[in-house]
Image (cartoon, rainbow, N blue to C red; front, side, top):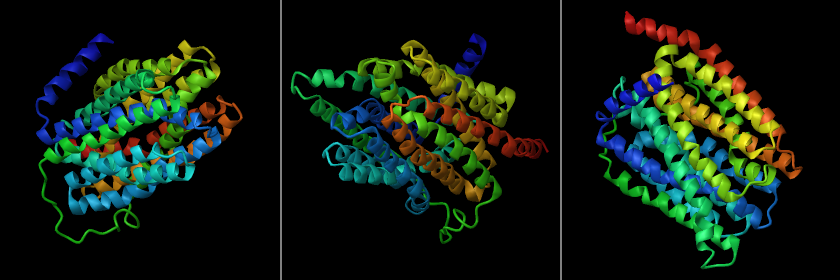
Amino acid sequence: MLNPFRQGALEYARHLSRFNRNVRLCFLASMLSGIAQGAFAVIFNLYILALGIGPEVLGRILSAGPFAQAVGSIPIGFLAEIIGYRNAFGIIYGATGLSQIAQVASPYVLLIITAAFLGGLAFAGDFVVRLPFLAANSSEAERTHVFSLSSLIFSVSLSLGALLAGYGPNWLSSFTPSLVVAYRYTLYAAGALTLLALLPIALIKAQPVQVKRRISLYPYLWGMNRFTIQAAIASGFVGLAQGLVGPFLNLYFVYHLGTTREFFGNVTALALFPAVLAIALGPVIAVRLGKVRSVTVLRLLVPLSLLLMAWTTQPLLGTAGYWAYRALFMMSQPISFAFAMEAAERKAVVAASAWLNVTYWLGNAIAAPVTGIFLQRSDYATPFYMAAACAALGGLSNQVFFAAKEKSLKSEASS
């Protein structure tokens, strides 16, 4: 394990010095936003339940943002082609930060859902815009490392946000005896961090819009090619798997395994280390096995970690399953993105990125209310079984759809 890890570290160090200023500023903005998301991952569900809102309603709340992201992905991608990446990022982080603050400013469910939906519409563009932005600001040789480092930075920021949020309400206890109020102000601070991401975005050097023609929705809809459709299907399975368990992991640890909020915050923060190792090894594995086979193998390993979490009642085994699940997910996604950006036709890169996001978040939106129904019945195991099946389908569809495509690309490159 040490030799591949050392090789991966050396590769990152070699490529990092070549990344341009725009990429680094994008990484900084992503980190600030990631810290905020890490805080929401630890506290938001607990805050909602502390308000007296049940798990079934929570599932609907958690579905609003992903559904909005699915709906908003194509319009945001379309808008980014018109106004440019920097302006699109400004809208994304500004509206997302305001929506995060609005979600905890009122105890009324309708207002929370509305704020979550509006924030989801804005944040839809983060993935859609970031992939082509990073691709445009990096060479083909750097691309896998840029996407992997982007995932690594996001993972680090999520862990930091989770750690701070685990103890944040305790620090506020000297100012207020109400746990609900402590949760609320911790989440206010998280929303402010997302707004702070506007500063590095403002420093990004604007790039001229390359396309002089009239921009059309045709490539996003009727003009979709076979590759985009297949990539969207595979991404949808991944979204279903993630949506069934990802948004509810804090409830799984606190209410099913009997741990504390602080324990889950620490576990989420420490998940950084296996994630870093996994992401660092990703490009090395992709070189040895090929991108498609690497993604297939990694996604087929995900169900093992999910089944462990479904079967155990021991916090340490649950932690091991969670770490493995997150590491495998974080390792496979950047490799999958890099292949998608290489395999998509140049004129359809933004459309492919948009549809990857649409189906991923649509899967999340469909899955979250389903899990909410099971949690209302105190059934924590079934969502993990369902997620394991979806993850396996994501791996199998990746292999069936793209193995031949990768061979074709290699043949073209060598000829």
